[in-house]
Structures are given as C-alpha cells and as structure tokens.
Image (tube, rainbow, N blue to C red):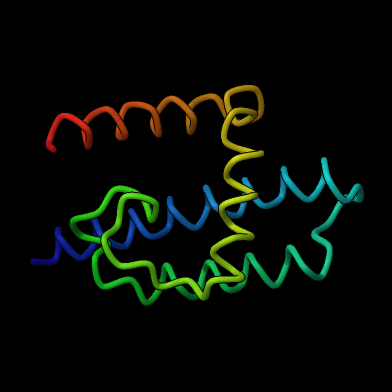
Length: 112
C-alpha cells in the first residue's frame, strides 16, 4: 500500500512539474518576461490545486484523457490553449519529458 501511495505522489509531482513548465513556456513566449504574468500564475495555481484533488490519478494518464473534466470552463479553455502551444515545443525545451509523454500516450491508446 505504501508503494502505491508513493507511485501516486510521484505521478502527481511529475504532472504538476509538466504543467508548470508548459505554462512557463507559454507565458515566456506569449507574454514576454522572465516570471509568470498574473493570469498564467493564476492558471498554474489552479492546475496544481486540481491535480492535488484528482481522484483518478491512480488510473488516468493525462487530464485530456480523463472522463471527468474538473476544470471550470474558462480555466479549461486556458489550459487547452497552453497545451496546444507548448506541447509541440516541449521537445526542444524538455525533450525527456516530451518523449515520456509520447510513450505514455501510445500506451494509453493501445489499452483502448
């Protein structure tokens, strides 16, 4: 049971890290500046809160593949915009993370 808890905690940590990096990349490229603008900082805090409260962390791969969308509609649209912009660019900024995402996505599609 302790190993399962550790695995879920690690998964939460990695998901938070990934979302934070993607929001940071989006903000730097779209809004300029070295730190997050207030709008992107609010989105980052909201995403971290949602990840912390996710009941499906054990079984899901990514929020986009989840059956339950727990983001408020406006925040969901913002995070979708960030993901569309940052996703393709992650291979240049965080290649290991991008490759891990591709592998996990392929595994998820094979399960279905």
